[in-house]
Length: 117
Length: 117
Image: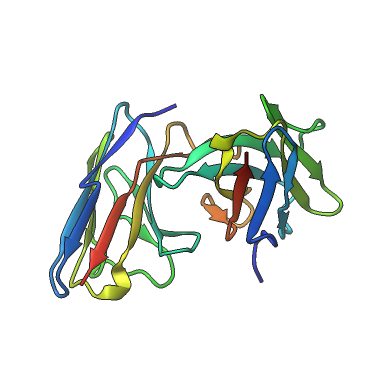
């Protein structure tokens, strides 16, 4: 398993500003994922972040809005840019410790609760 | 079409009784994995149990078991001897094999379980 921490745990932001969320893992992991969970909804994958390469974004998510960094095998950041109230969500970091074989369990961080006013 | 369908928005169960949470899935890939996660009100995602498409036996983990019916494409979670601490959102998720090149977990909309004393 992996122990994942996220900062901040929650924040209230004004529209038009940006927030950077940090994800730290206690061990080296190959793949890191960022998810969004809008209020009362399920989890939606924003992007997959591999160390040493550009993040791969899912349909509906763009790099200008959600830039991601992955400087090493234990750390990643997600920035939510030019925020609007529709960005109010829980943002979750997730990791797959191994090589993401079919049965590989993904572990999740505690999430960052974002409210945009 | 939805990949994962959870038809029960909410379920209620009496403490110490068993409860079944439904999950059906849609895939044409012969290789896939099915996961169940628990999300308490605090927001973290807790991995519960995994079932692979080629597994011959239903998965079990303590009080959790998975009723896997491959022909029906269902993977229902059974929680035995419910406890008050089981009250949470429960998400079913699937990872398909590599025929389609997908490595991501796709989540259902979730079921909110309430355990009554």
